[in-house]
Image 1 (tube, rainbow, N blue to C red):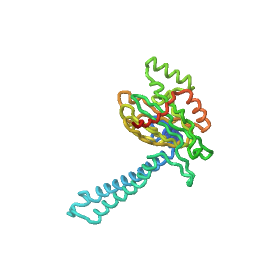
Image 2: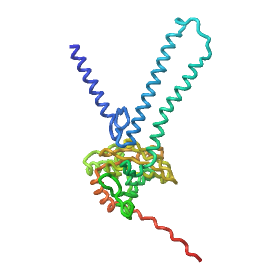
Image 3: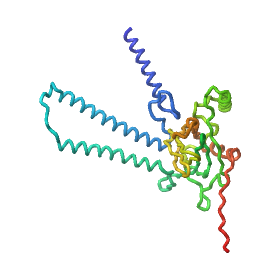
Image 4: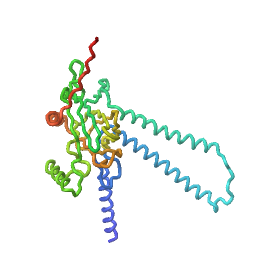
Length: 323
């Protein structure tokens, strides 16, 4: 009987751990989540590796300090050491506790700087290393309290992902056909009748209930395995364009344009939120990025150019006539 109860408790514990482990990896926040969201881009994969390195370093330092504390309490308590030492300096120990932390910081700094440079700018095309550059440029604009997006460029690519060129210039699908759209929260999940109707409309159109505070009416659509350059700008106050699964978090500042990038390696919809306190409705301006196949992206792009507002191409200023 005792063995049966023990087996039952063991099964319950295993099931609970499995549920927690499953909840820890997701493209959106989950209840009882224990870890970072599952990586869906090379940048996030690098962030997770760096995070794991830091965890092991922190664990090692903590265990070492704990062992020292236990040793000191046992070896140097009043009973074990009734006559305390009057030593005030120990050159070897002082050198060690200065040099070792410096070495630990160097171990942390090297991958940290490498990751910062890797995530800073979108990659450029490198035929020698067989690495395509960013072929899609999207401008994300933060407003109080929603996002708007401008598809600036989307180059045609070959089978390897390199931009197709004519006259040594990339062939842009959006040449003269740039478009923009707004992206509002689908519904807030409140008891307001208007909000309930929005939730019902979303469920009817998409065949599922909206993810609370994360789904939007118009999502950002990008193709898989394609580097996407994102230009981020604040139109009123400071916002922050953040998609955890992509390893992207950059401030949207008024008066300037910041750059980030990602390359999704998994299909699906990935969620984020504004991560800068920007006002009373800060919690109601989510971000949704849908990653699709290249063929599906081309079809969506053709529809979007006719569906969304066209962005007029900037006109070149004419030089004043000489008098």
